[in-house]
Image (cartoon, rainbow, N blue to C red; front, side, top):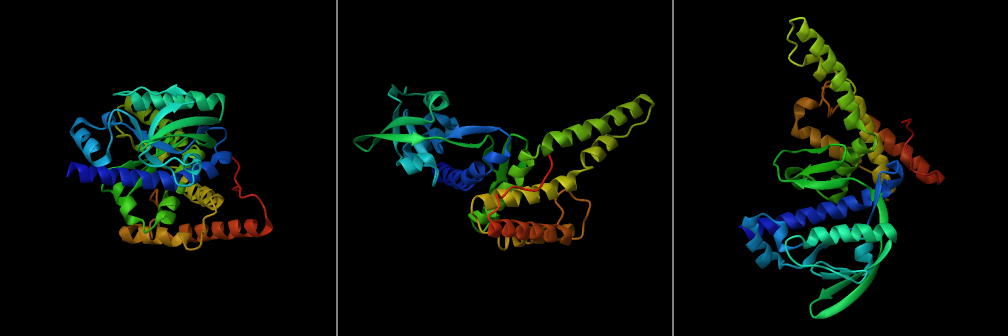
Length: 312
């Protein structure tokens, strides 16, 4: 059971990586310099899992004390250079890798240092009994992690530095286009700095709550909650809009994109006519999404760069 669970988790994580890497690459010019060089490679040793899963990692995934490729992101620099799942990485720019509990962390740190000095690096790998060398050139991507959360709640959310997608959302999406639509929306929250803005709004209200408390009035955090939600729907609309541009910049066809959010609304029918929720499912939202698709289509036809029309 642990082996099955671990294998499925690796598959799900790889799906998210393959889906999100093109988004992070396409959105890099929109991230205002908050980018990092990446080759699109996920690695691990048998020590990188909880102790109860380490035996399953050895037997089901073939992991050991060496650094093994779990996923070379589809279409990413490492995959284009020829690296494959199951390759054992033995050296970076002729620097031999250590083995053992900290091997994957040491590899990632070494990789980051080498890429910083030169975007093109050499990776030595062992594939079966064959030793191979690959030249890989890193590319700039937005410096946000898109991560699987093992929860059964139908949700995805951002925290300013990461995007989290729950297991149920992964299952709910019919294909990677729908999953990318969700991820692009949450990525847009990070790009537009919505999370720190919400926190700033909260503290404005919290000052009122504190002042009321000094006068013997218990507001139970009412004003902090109120101000944190003051612009939440505007933030959602902005994330919808910017997210559609991020998705379009990957070359994805946007036709029918708004239908996914309609399908999401069916999961919570009470949201359909609500204008007070942070994730509204109102007709206005869908019309705005369709207007964004029309705007993007016109830019494509005119050969205009796909940049959202926003003042930040």
